[in-house]
Image (cartoon, rainbow, N blue to C red; front, side):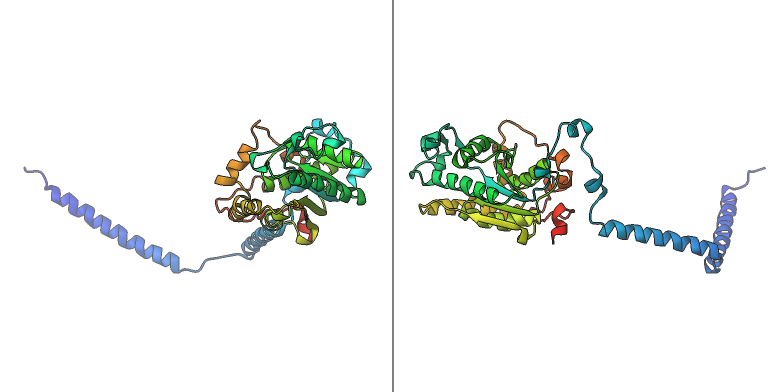
Length: 322
């Protein structure tokens, strides 16, 4: 007797599949068309979950400060070494004098001696007018500080600080309590940001007012891209420009080419040309301490978006000044 043909088995399987598919399809359609059965309790639970989620997201979006901005406390090993007096804790006005050269003299009569200043190649020549500008920046910064009991003078630029500080003491016989310095060398934007952090490190608070004493030709750089990058309120920010007596047209052209224009394209100085300048000013590979001592500025100090013109969008301590 011959075996049953294989085709008969296939016909049976095919018929079974057709029957299964059609019945399942009908059941699925009936299920989708039927009304769902929600109880009042389930509706209340879902609505409650929605409200909680909605309120949480609103709180996150409109919160003025993230938890890290208000709850961070430096390690006790650091705090135990700091004893601020009432004078420092009550200061609110930051006066900044950016450094431009190193003074190596020791006597008052050597202050205007060009041979006692370590200068860059582009700073050499042309007499003592440039040195006079350095000294006038220092003098004006100290005068502003002495007239305002709430002010703290910071000389920015690590390698310039000892000379600038010593000149200020010689010129005006002022005490050192309200004369401080930064400990990190960098280009102009980072110097400004670090000076704000240094003010907090010394006083335990952030300044209400910032005054910068420098070259008049650098006014636009500080008032426009730098202040914009920091989002510091314009009515709490002042730049006092003092220019050398000589007319340095080449210096003004250099300022636009190497300072103002690059910062207009790269607000935070962390790309290409300006990053190279920042690295060149740190030959000793130093690290700053301000992530710990000024944690509210951590996000700002680390801000380096691919879009070099994008302004930092995180919270800042001076947002409340507006």
